[in-house]
Length: 395
Ligand SMILES: Nc1ncnc2c1ncn2[C@@H]1O[C@H](COP(=O)(O)OP(=O)(O)O)[C@@H](O)[C@H]1O
Ligand SMILES: [Mg+2]
Image 1 (cartoon, rainbow, N blue to C red):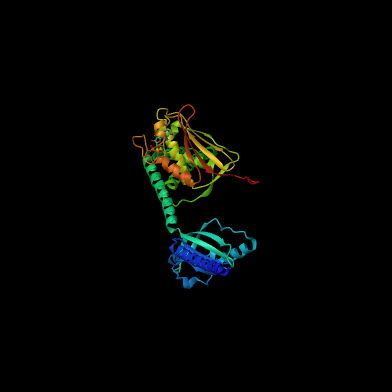
Image 2 (tube, rainbow, N blue to C red; image 1 turned 90 degrees about the vertical axis):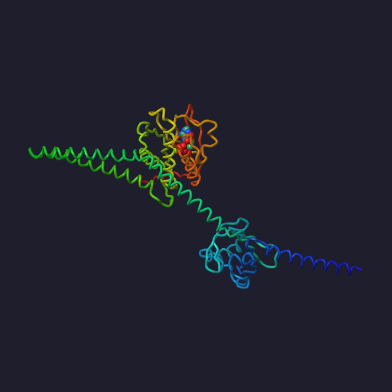
């Protein structure tokens, strides 16, 4: 009596398996992502339609081969080690997480992919499934965005220096006129000494004055070196920089805005432990330069009020730098637009200073914020990841 029921059950079961297979096939073929199944040795068992399109291999050319054929170095070299390590320790760096790696097409082209890997748990043998998304477009968009930001930062550095032409002339003219008057003094001394025998004292005087000439020439050279470094077209590069040195260098540079000479700058920098930042020096100088100039702009009616620059550790990993002025401050209505591109309240302003500062700081993993000053004016603060300088025994 039970026999027909059993037969029916079996028939239903077989039908279910056939349906499941058909559904799986449809899923695999419809998937936009490449789906690859490998065994515990890395041997490819399944290569769906999207994988064939992405890698340029028909299924027949990859099934049975090792998955290494789809990887460039160093992944190719490391993959066997990685699989066997997982089989022994069950410690997977990638399973269930997904990560960005590189893959290799049949024509040799290497491209970036996002790979997520899962283990096929109830199969008759060990199997892993890899789901692969070609992220060439995203990676390109990301690097285009970085390149655009760098280009924009460069263009605005150039235009700032264009506006600063008078200040630059002043910065270079000062040591040049000093050189000229010291040279004149030397000439006078020599003329005088041709009548009287040289004395040691006269020679010493001459030597001191010549030293002054050479130090002023170095000063002019230094101004030019700093300016050239600031406006040179370059690719952004990050190096460890002592923040306090960077702030002092930025102030020297900002002196091309001659109004700064009247205002003066007060500094309250954290000295211990001294902060070391992994940054693009020129870009952070640009941020400080912009903030200093905005502070001076805001204090037009108080030409002798100082700009304050301070730095402090906010925790073990972050340092905060603040530029404070006692100027006209930011009105409530303007607050929302402050960091928007082209927002300016100045007649000749461009409104690109703060947006550029913000994108530079964000690309370094920090934040740029504004708050009102205690009585009046503004405080613009940015955070940056930092570590403390460990002084060696000699240092
Ligand atoms: N320190 C400051 N005090 C008051 N307002 C400021 C300050 N810094 C920036 N602002 C406001 O933000 C606007 C945008 O600044 P920014 O992006 O540097 O462009 P710009 O200086 O060319 O106007 C300024 O026009 C000004 O209204
Ligand atoms: Mg500005």
